[in-house]
Image (cartoon, rainbow, N blue to C red; front, side, top):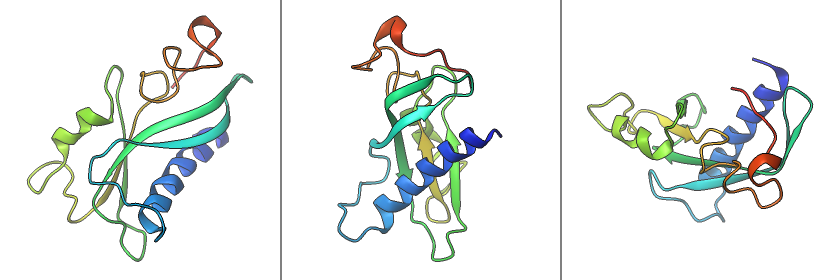
Length: 130
């Protein structure tokens, strides 16, 4: 994974952890859509996404050792809401055992994308690759 991609994933994980660990923050319900404001995201080809926002949902609780986190990215034309079908006691990820972080890909209409960017709308949105 490229260095910038690794920082991006870490930012998402830390945003999800902060939402869970910060006692003053209002905890989101399992599966509730949340957003991490990442500021300027530098892309691999030198371009940038201004005011980058990443949609995500979490289920379960992070354990004391912080060793039970599972990052589940969405797929092409999917979003974090679609991942809910895989979460449950008898499903792919059991939130009683794992802290699941489901992220919405950039460009999917939930996270920063050409359709929802206020400063880089439409064709002004930088080309991205996954």
